[in-house]
Length: 234
Ligand SMILES: NC(=O)c1ccc[n+]([C@@H]2O[C@H](COP(=O)([O-])OP(=O)(O)OC[C@H]3O[C@@H](n4cnc5c(N)ncnc54)[C@H](OP(=O)(O)O)[C@@H]3O)[C@@H](O)[C@H]2O)c1
Image 1 (cartoon, protein in one colour):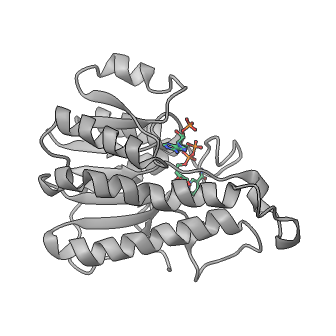
Image 2 (cartoon, protein in one colour):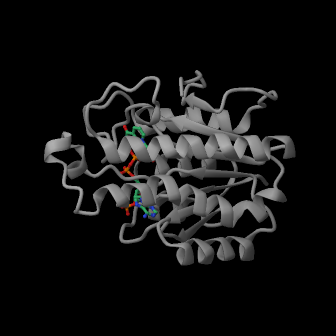
Image 3 (cartoon, protein in one colour):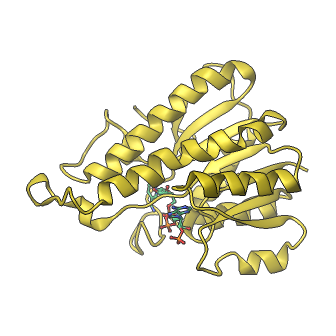
C-alpha cells in the first residue's frame, strides 16, 4: 500500500489532502500541531490507515520524534507533502508600518521555509526506500519573483520564495536519484488562511495535488506548478 505524510493536516488544505489520499486507498501519516480535533472524524472512518503524528515543523526535536514514530510504523514512505504554513497579518504592513521587532517575519520563515527542509531531511531515509519518491512543498504564487504583484507581505512572500528555491535545489540533487520534487501553488482557497471569499474549496486543490503526486513526470519537467499542473514563473 502506498503511503504519504502530510504536514499541518489538522485543518484546511492539509486535512483535505489527508481525506483525499485516504479515500484513494493510501496509508496516511498526518502531521498534527495538536490542540484541534480536526482529524478525529477521519481517524474514526479510517482507523487502520490513518496515523496522527504530533509534529511542530519549527522544532527539530519534534520533527525528529515524528520521523522516528513514522519509521516505527512503516519501513518506507512514498510521498511527502510539506503543507504546514502560516501567514501572520501583522506582517502584511507596508514597510514604514512593519514591526520588524515582533518576531512575525522570523516565525513565517521558521514554518514556511525551514519547516519543509527539517521535515524533508528527517523523512528522507524513509522516502529513499519508497516507490514513488515524491516531495511536494505547498508554496504560493506569493513566492514567485517573476509574478510579484504585491507592495507588502514581505515575510510571507520571502518565506515562500525561499521554499521555492529549496525545491529547485532538492530537485537538482534528488532528481537524478529518481525523485520528483514540486513546489505547488495551491490556488486561493477557502480556508482559515484564505478566508471565506477565496476562489476554491481546499478539496479542489487537494484533488489537483493528488493528481500531481501520483502521475509520471518526465525528466526536465517543471518544478514550480499550480495545483492544476500548469507551470508557474519563478
Ligand atoms: N489558503 C490559501 O489561499 C493559500 C494560498 C497559497 C498558499 N497557501 C499555502 O497552503 C498551505 C495550507 O494553507 P491553508 O490555507 O490550509 O492554511 P490553514 O487553514 O491556516 O492551515 C494551516 C495548517 O498548518 C498548521 N501549522 C501551522 N504552524 C505549524 C507548525 N509550526 N507545525 C506544524 N503545523 C503547523 C496549522 O495547524 P494549527 O491549525 O494547529 O495552527 C494548520 O493545520 C500553507 O502552506 C499556505 O501557506 C494557502
